[in-house]
Each structure stands twice: as C-alpha cells, then as structure tokens.
Image 1: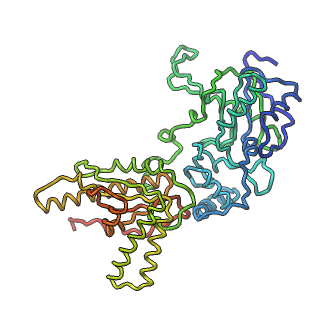
Image 2: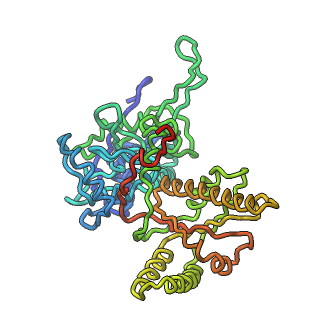
Image 3: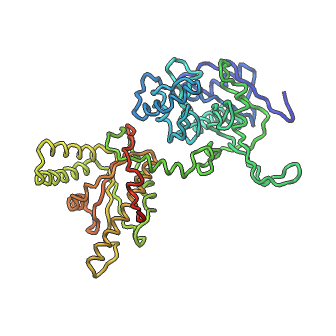
Length: 470
C-alpha cells in the first residue's frame, strides 16, 4: 500500500525466541523474505530492547545476586510505599541490580526512579521481567544501544544496499501521565530530534521552541503493533515516514540536561541532602576501580573553594600505587607505635590501632593527600601575624577539603578525612619526595561504598548558637 500522507507499520512475523549471540540482522532478513518483503531506502526498523538484551547476554538470574546494605536499606524504605499503592514488593536482589545499573537514584518512592549508566531517567534502571524466559531471570538495558543499532543498520545495508534507520525501543512510564509508551533508547541513520525552530507555522509565524522527538514518536507508534503482552512482535518495519538520513547521530541528543529537568529534585534541596547525607566512611569499599579522571573532576570542584587572599594554597597528591602506599604506611605506623608507647598504651591497643590504620590506607581504591603550600602564604616581619597567616592557610585548605568531600558524594563515592599526616609530616614528605614548602595536612580514603551509614545525632541548634542578647 502507498499512502501519500501516511505511513505503514508492519509487524515482522516468525521472529524466534532470541538467545545470546543470535544474529539479529539475519533474523530480520529471514522474516522479511517469508513475508515477501524487501527493504527500501528510507525504511525504518524498530527493534524491541528485549531482543537486543538477550542477544547480548544482558540477562541476570536474581538468585545469583547478593544484595548490599544499601539495597536492603532501600527495600525497607520503599516497601511501605509499595504496599500503600497495592504494588508487589521489590526483591532486594532486584534493587541491587538497579543500583548496579544506575548512576544515581533520583527518587525512591513506591518505585525507584533512576538515571541509568546511559543517562536515561526511568523506573528501575529499565530492568524488565516481561518476555524473558525463566522465573527469576530479568533483562537489563543494552550497554550501548546506539552501537547495537549502528551494527544492525550496517549489516542490513551490507545485505540489501539500502539506507535505512534503525531504532532500539523500550517502554517507559511518564512522570505526569498514567501508562507506558514506546521510547527510543538507541538510534542509527536517523536523528533523534527534529528541530523546527525558525520554520513557519500555518499562519506564517516563526516557530521559536518547537523540537519534535521524532524517534520517540516512531517508537510509540511501533509499540502499538508490538504490544506489551503475548503478541510476540518485537520487530516493526515503518515505511513512508520522510526523514533525513544521517549516519552521525546518538540518542544522547534527545536527553534533557539535568539543569532544565523539572522532574528532578530542585538543586537547592539536592545540595542540602548531599551536605546532610555525607558521612565519614571507615568500612570496606566495593572491589571496584575508581577512575582517576573522576578523582580529578572532584578536585576540579574543590579548587573553587574560598581561600584567604584567594591564595589557593591547597596541593593534592593522588596516591594510586600500592607499593608506595605500603612503604608510606609502614613508616607512618612505626612513628605511631613510638608515639603510643610514649603515651603508655598497651600492646593490644597499639596492634589494633596499627592494623586498622594499615587496612584503611592500603585497602582503599584511592588515597588522596592534601598539603598546604606555605610558599604561597604572605610574609610578615611580625611572628604573631606569621602564625595567623599560617592559620589562614589551614582554614583555606579545610574549605577545599569540604568541597572535595561533597564532590565525592555527588559522584556516589564514599570517603573519609584522616588527620594522620599532621603527626608524620616529615616521613610523608621524605617518602613521597615532596617540595620543602609542602605541609601534609590530611589523607582521604576514597572508593565506592559497600554499605550506607546513618547520621549520628547532631546537637540542637540552640546548643551551637551563642546568643549575645541572653
């Protein structure tokens, strides 16, 4: 059929149950042949996420997942809300998978709204049970849907010589309406958005803000044919939609920037929560590498802290090498042992203290040293003013340390501020070959947390405000 002002949506038949490493382009071509169809230039193929996830091996058995303390805490938090809404309770194992697949938990209500590792904002990190074989098996979103769409499009082009668009689709709920709709999570050959700004409407007015999410519209149309239950139609051919073919695109262009996302928590509330929730983390970290680039991004934030005379006296040293840490903590612990023996502490107390110090500094994925560079301090002939200038420097680097800890919190990293360097300045400077003007002030152990920490009681406001009018 050929409609002048319309499009066709054709569900491809006889698509088998897909397994890991199955050839999706070949499956599509075989289905088209059986239906007596051939691809044409300008066609669009919409493929359900579940097909891609299964072919990529992106499925997990919940019985193999061990929930963390954070997952168990979230389970306790959202379970009463789920019961109130008449919804089934989320298994802590599923919650753990959601955490693993997410950059951030945005809202924890009767459902978990997350930002996935791709940047999608959706329920439960897009993890789904529908259309997956196995009672305890769930599918995860593809790790790189754009890459999957591109690979399929290129293979179909190689087999048919046709320029087409490919959309990987899923169904997401919406914050202000009931019901799930089809959305695009990966694209190739077609721009995610259609920018109409600058064009004229029917009355000649120039459009100022109109941007059409064309791939989401196409995914939603395809969803009506795919269905959500036992229809078994995971691939849709769309024919007749006019679009500009473009090989250089990414689904990221359709994602709303955080700063203009009205769904997310207001930035002032979010910052307040970061400040209130940050805790000193002295527990084991996840066995997960922390990218140095993330640490540098946090230090980038820390360098915007206030400082006396705008001196910016802070100097950061990122200590990743384990052998260097081993040498450093061994020498520091010898100094600590001598100090504790001078204090008259028992051998059991000393051994316990040394063991804890060693474990904290060696096991942390990243160790950061903060120094005060006294070379940058203003010089005075008066000793009292010199001493006060040093205090200004200490205050300044303390503000930078606070910024750093908040930056870690924003990046979902746990950290603890240790003042041990104050008691071993010379050892640290000699071991690390630091400049003479560097004064070691603090260590930060940094990594991904294994458990959540509850805030200790805080003093009442009237206890910390001294009222001159009393």
